[in-house]
Image: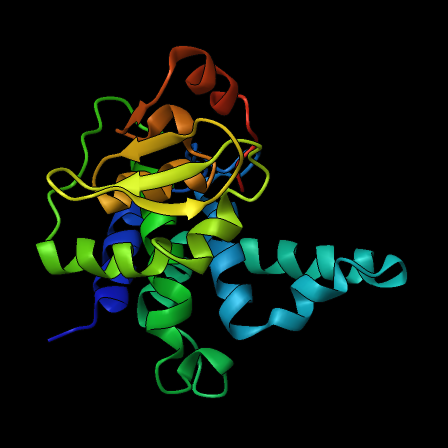
Length: 212
């Protein structure tokens, strides 16, 4: 049985294939082609992305990205679907599940939710549990660290879990773990969650920048 990360990789590849090349995504300024290039270089040639942060190497990095984007779109999607090359940090035991689970899920939804008429996927309960293990702890605190308001996460029917402590009243993000993840990754408008708290506190929290 494939891991949750592997299952989300296949869902992401399916979404890219269905949307087609050059389609919109929720990643600001990125099309489906750009997103596929990002995923391929992230796993197979991370030095290309790193070089883009170094002044003298920016043009080289951009050229490598453009060369990758020029490949046939079906080939790009196939590379995403097949996963990292053998020589990659992402092939180390446990790395894919720890590093890629939310990466694959969020980017799958970046493609799906940029299209008209989308609805949340019905995901297995154990996959939602895997998302919850990722966000309901130090990682969740990291994602909402810019908030000056205390933050708790809560799944329907479960108790709230405090992830960020602040003085004064806080807010609770109520929803399925995947939807909470969408919100804290900056996809606020597309996340199906309820923010519970005093109205003025909720309003201030909504203005808090999230990771994108």
